[in-house]
Length: 214
Image 1 (cartoon, rainbow, N blue to C red):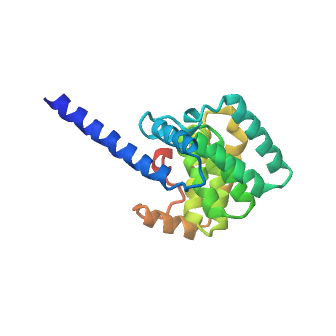
Image 2 (cartoon, rainbow, N blue to C red):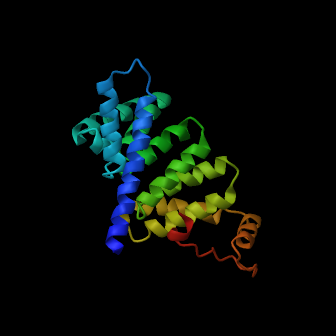
Image 3 (spheres, one colour):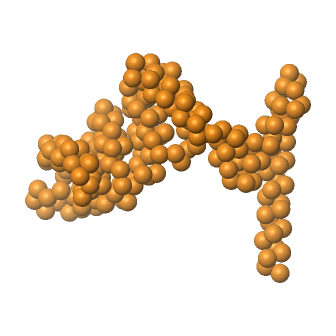
């Protein structure tokens, strides 16, 4: 009995999704051929019903993604951040769970001095890659530009904890520790108060884990 009820709920949900997709396709305009509308609808069904990524639903290969990424990377390295941003944005939409896409997009916004959007992308990547401290370090810089020393301090703390025990991140850990030492006492006192820590007057850093900070 319970399985039948659950099955009916799934069927109704799929019906609602298909109706929404049908309505979306119908609004694409008279200039869009019917066959093209059907293809769009098929892609959306694969994404929402079959839980495919847009990349999978559109049958885009890893090789094609690699070519786009390489070109976007070249644009970024030649200072064409806005153009690179559009390509990285497309890559992120096609496969939002792919390691590095969120950070690459964040780096473009970072260079264009859109620190708020950049920090958001870095935080997304930090959650996707819980053992990598790099995106958290970039996020620290964004928070400093946004005059958010509390957030910056937390990001540095995350960097240190994630980098600990990973030799390849030794340099970034050392840099983060040095930056933490440079934070003034008033910032730490205010942060301790906001986070619910008592002000004991000592100079010990707060013990905030990566899972709490990201």
